[in-house]
Structure formats: C-alpha cells, structure tokens
Amino acid sequence: LAFGLTRPGGLLGGGHAGYRFYRSSDGWLALAALEPHFWQGVREHIAGLPANPLDPAAHAALAAAFAAHSTPHWQAWAQEHDIPLEVVSC
Image (cartoon, rainbow, N blue to C red; front, side, top):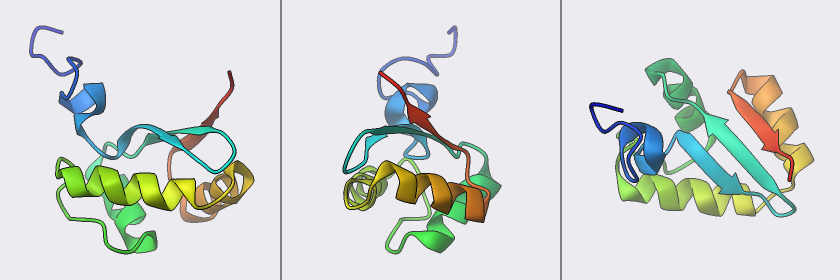
C-alpha cells in the first residue's frame, strides 16, 4: 500500500492488463498473469497484445477477446495453456 501498487490504475489496481477482471460472454473472469512468463503465455495465445501490459491497448485487446467467448471456453483455454485465470462467482 505504501508504494501505491493497489491504487486505481496502479500495477495491482487494474493498471496491469494481465492482473484484472474481464467480462466473458456469459460472466466474469479474473486474470492473474502478473509475472512476465504468464504475460508472455497470454500474448502467445491472444493475437495483437502489446508487449507492455501497462499499455492501454492491452486492456482493450483482452477485453474484446474475453467478451467474444464463454466462461467455459476461457477455463479450458487457461488450463490448456497454464494461464492463471479463475471464474468470478457472484
């Protein structure tokens, strides 16, 4: 907290595209690809993602990709590619 990492837009407050919530076509997902190797894994399997996860274009690209498919689709994708992603239950 002292370094501002969790403030809105901070690294852990939504600023890192690999560490935030996204809407799927039928629910919500929590992506936790904060470490560089996980971010690289996401980039290898979702076309058009910038190398820098702090780039606003990365947020937009992931939001569009996740919205295009169902939660079960993304669960299977994450398991297949060892991506840290969880379903958000409300």
